[in-house]
Length: 409
Length: 230
Image 1 (tube, rainbow over the protein chains, first blue to last red):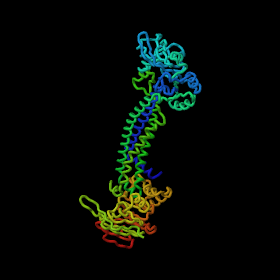
Image 2 (image 1 turned 45 degrees about the horizontal axis):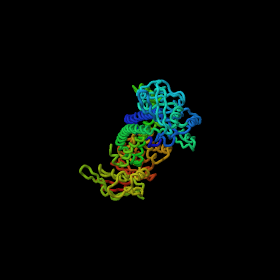
Image 3 (image 1 turned 90 degrees about the vertical axis):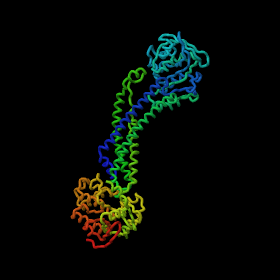
Image 4 (image 1 turned 60 degrees about the vertical axis):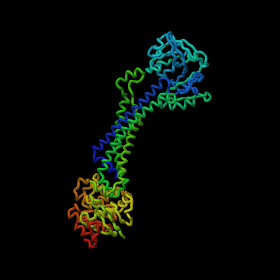
């Protein structure tokens, strides 16, 4: 074994309690970081999934400009054949066509302005959580049935229930007057008041008739199994669209820019806290190494006088820190992974969360996402800061004078 | 050819409110293969002169030449390289590395020099045998007596056959028999390998082996005598 490595290793165990205490601080922070980062990414995935599965999906095919200015006439022509072709081509049932219009919904007693989705009853459950949130009645069954599902708050505001009639008034795609009478077949409750108050869904066939869509719609929604799968699917989807149709594909990031911003804001505050933790560990290492260097000043004088260059001496201190940091990294990453994996398998339930989660169609338990990245990222940052903390004690050795050092006992 | 040449060295230390002249216009030239004893009472300047020759301490003024190189103007790194390649040190207080065994302490300089492991092992075992420490090679300094530690320090200083050995009271912790054996070893190295020895000592027995006695007082050389070595 190299003499500097041997020296470094043995020096670590001159004060075993101090070495273990410092390594213990690293192990603790690494375990905590692995768990927190894994939990954080698990939460983000849940957050993204739950947001996207309400209406947005992972991607949407739209007419150019529709995303920024949702006008009726900015439509995708022949939307049902297009959705069918995409389903066949990608062998995915989680592709569905939609139309969207603004209208006035009137009951016998009241009227409210609402957003109306025209949806494919067979495929909408694959891209949206709304069909699964029906609290009363049922979801739509037929493309042309004169039925509608509305949010619970809207039903309460309009004072309607299952089987009651609603009159819809609005503008057709060609600017003409659009009107229909539909029966309330289902009432959904997403737990999000804005959605429950402002939205309704009707069959796409009926929607196209009422709003003079002439076979057109406004969005083909695509949901992939995972975000990674969606990323892979995106270029294939773009390539499969007819070049002359002038359609565009937006991913979830473009469709829900606020979601990414919310995640980024949460990440910033979380990483601020992690930063404090890492800095505390770095100071603990700085303290340990500084004491260790001061204690050995006499000995460093000896090795300098024997012909060891100051730079090699500095490397010795760095090597000692690297060895100690490596122990902290390995043990911390292993304990962190074991600890987190238990929660990845069994889930983490926060007291009082179950009822609220059930209300919002969310899973009652959060599952940290343990990957190689989440297991190693935190410990690697701690390791880097540990080395950084040892720079000062190591650099002090460059100023050491052999005779003066040997005078110190 | 001279192994060591010091020209008009001055070194002053601050001790409390007083300036103490550790070296006061010291000039000395030691030829290759020389065997010189620096004799002085405590505080006479002999350790300071040894440190200046070894590049461990920089004089306030004057020139120090070792192996035809002026060392008082060298950088720390260059001085370290010079010591590693040319100089062996024996300190008064042993100064062994506490976490290394006797053999590892002896091998330390050779390992820094890049000597292959097998050669290091062979040389270190041979030198430990010569200084009478065969069988104690796996002991750490804390497990050895003062005399044994001093012999390890001597073994470490001479194992890589440096051209110059600087020794500060090398026999201070040794009994008379071991002191004689050590001096015989120094004499043999001096004769057969032309190693230059500069030894700071009070010990009359050590002085008997020297070819030249340099007496110092208050940082100055007051006597410089050639003699027939024992």
